[in-house]
Image (tube, rainbow, N blue to C red; front, side):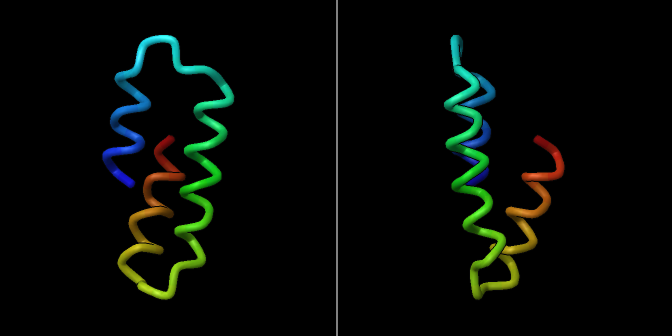
Length: 48
């Protein structure tokens, strides 16, 4: 997840659609049964 967000930030010409796709993927992590995954995705969503 971190790599996904990091690569999007570095990508030239990333579109709003690209950002929306990444956000949708991160939203799925919020419902993950692993508390560490939920914590990480919540932090990434808040910071991006």
